[in-house]
Amino acid sequence: MNQMRNKRDQAGIACPKCGCRHFYTTHTEPLRDGRLRRRKMCRYCRRRIVTYEVVLPPPSSQRSP
Image (cartoon, rainbow, N blue to C red; front, side, top):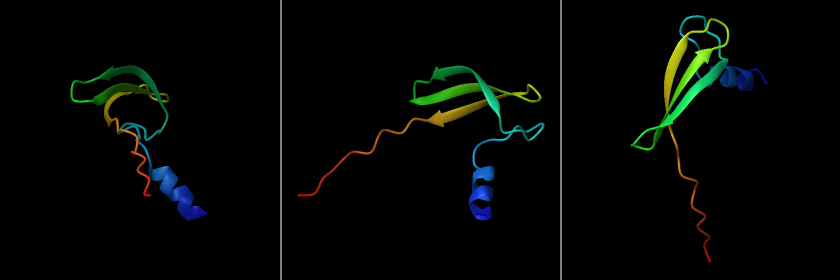
């Protein structure tokens, strides 16, 4: 149980200033190369950060006969 909690705690991003993992998304913008640029603000200290996210296509459903 502790191992699952530790992996979950390490997932995602943390604020470089205070370490908080809770953010407000203030702006989302699609880029020409297919990525998303999201501007986020820490809920605790209000520091602003920018993330770039890759949008993955859904897996194709290939059925074998």
